[in-house]
Length: 342
Ligand SMILES: [Zn+2]
Image 1 (cartoon, rainbow, N blue to C red):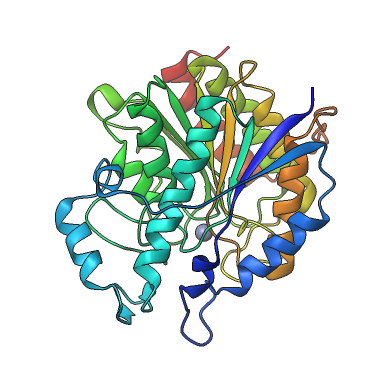
Image 2 (cartoon, helix red, strand yellow):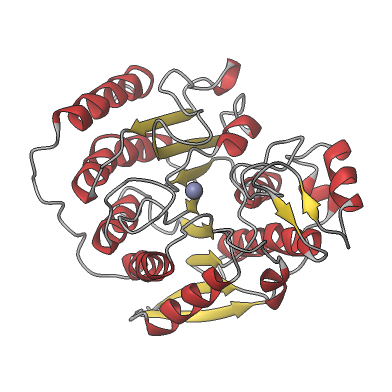
């Protein structure tokens, strides 16, 4: 039977107006929409309406004090930090972005869709429990994961392939074994977190897994990371729901980072990750970064095509750069220690 892709998009996301020259701009969504329209998907498309996330939903991962400060920014323009702007409708857009991620999670939990895409701005994975950060106002993917937990999903996995480390998401679930946070990111790079040693605390130890990679990592490096670490850990964890923090700034064209991923690499990453899941597990993509319009569109399209049926793309057996090989060996060893990987 043909599978279903639920999609949430909303005009409000364009009204989060960026200052001149800022990379996180509304045009990103035009590029993403155009790419989706062109995608060759063997999936039924189900368009769902966005809704604002409620205070209760947001307060599962954010503090009341921060939500209060955020509300006070509604209708105004300014900056939460050097990079993180807001325009008069940004708070409404951020609430709708988090709500859209929740709508996707609900569709996946209820089984009305197999896959989901929240095509949102502002992005979310840097947003901390008590504050906006790094272009992010509310942590959309974390709000969705917490919602799934509150609605009976016992294990949620967040796979964050944005080129930056999702410090906010990590922080929110650092002591929580019911949400596995797996991140592939360029290091060193903003925000500076996401070392191998950051593995969670208390009951959450082992349920944060970082794969920091130095600049220049390409499809082969990401493919090897998925084969050696992401896929086996997901098989061991056996989540009931998977959410991708889907940033496309590891694309070779991206101006904010120095990775060398291509569209094919994103397709393979998504497809191979799906191959590690039990049958029927819902998979949602929540848009994060990606600042080259062509690179964003192409790699988003490729990722969606990766959700479809068809063979799992083989990652070419390439000899990796010694640096990347060493980084992957360390990350594999760290994961194996906790997850008893074969
Ligand atoms: Zn990013």
